[in-house]
Image (cartoon, rainbow, N blue to C red; front, side):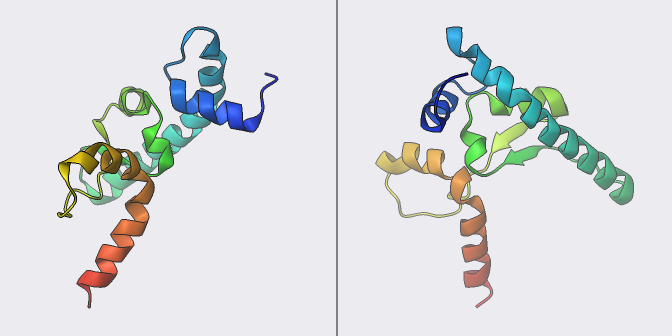
Length: 124
């Protein structure tokens, strides 16, 4: 496409899966990779449901990719399940309301680190 990695990352963050005008090519390049991940998630869900005789009720997206615009709707459509972004800061208190937008944005990125930290602290 003739763009450098930094510009591609910027376009991905700005446009996400939605694509806007001439930037639609970026989203069409991402979808095959996302579909591989979602197909694996479907396979794992089906395996879990068969072996545990229990249904998966929703999917929680974690990591930096969870902030990709449009990923929740796309994943929900593909998986036929409700999809939400991880919110690891929700059980924590003490940060001001003015930090809420920042906390919501960075939460998925820090999901694993916060979960491990909470687990270690609660086991002591």
